Amino acid sequence: MPVFALLLIAVVAEFAVIIAVGEAVGALWTILLLIAVSMAGVALLRRQGTRTLTSFTEALRARRDPSPEMADGMLIGVAAALVLFPGFLTDVAALLLLFPPTRAVVRKRLLTRAAARRGVVRHDVVDGEVVEDDPIIIDAPTIEPRRPADN
Image (cartoon, rainbow, N blue to C red; front, side, top):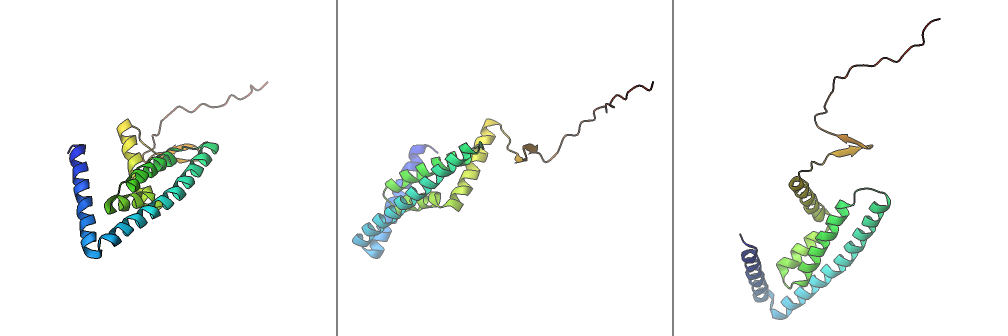
């Protein structure tokens, strides 16, 4: 499905939800709800953005892979764009991306898909060693140490 069609469906769904909420609670309350949810999103956006930037800096200082923090930063950027777009559906999607447990699920899926596209298989690392499901056992000849010659 083309991106334009998805965008059109999203806009129509957003208007439908705004109209439904407006009919249920009134126009003034609908506007106030839209403003309140956007303000909550902006506050959470600031907090999570600062937290992610701090985590990214710590990852660089500790010389560990910063890709989870980079993915979080990207997802927070997407959430910022969704918060700026007026509507209930986009605000809910933004709040889900700003909430750390749901963002972690999206981040894990995003990093897994990116690694699969690059052809990289991610393994767990324990004490600097790659841990694989099926270790490869190589039968190599044993080399005995030399013993000093008896005189």
